[in-house]
Every structure is written in structure tokens, then in C-alpha cells.
Image 1 (cartoon, rainbow, N blue to C red):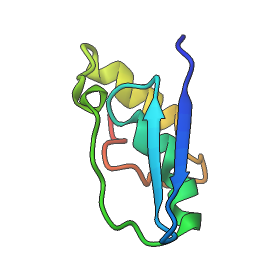
Image 2: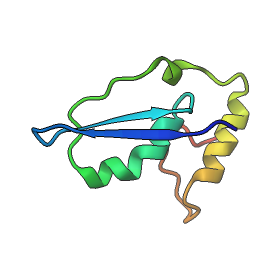
Image 3: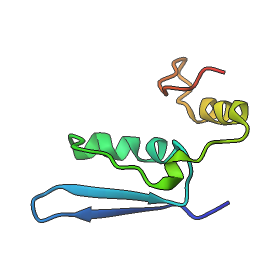
Image 4: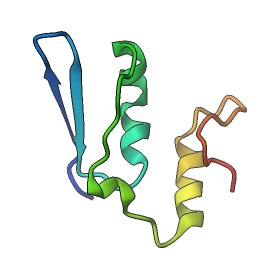
Length: 82
């Protein structure tokens, strides 16, 4: 298991840059979603190369997404259905 790091840079104009390191694929969006919702409007999003790494076992990834969901009976992620 690798170390996950989230780096924030607050610019003089008030814009915030966020960089997630140590994760692959869409996990970065899952990790930062709640923080982004609280910070404010998203202006742009650039992806690192690690975002485009695909899982060799997509079923396992979908099961993990289900386990990570809020189990109130609804699924809110874009790829949660197995």
C-alpha cells in the first residue's frame, strides 16, 4: 500500500490548486470530492498520468467502489454498478 499525499497551493488570487499523489485511476477524485465540494466552484481540472492507469481487474475495482459508497441505499459514483 502506497502513501497517499494531497498537496494544496493557495494562490494570491484565492484560487486553490490540488494535487493528489500515490493513487491511480479515479481514486483521486473519490478522495478529494468532499473537500472540493466545501472549497467552492471548480474552475478547471488537469490530470496526472497516474489518472489514466487502468485496473487490470475492473470487477474488483467496482466492488471496491461499492464498499466505499455511503450504504444508505443509494449509489452516487458514476461507476458503482457491478
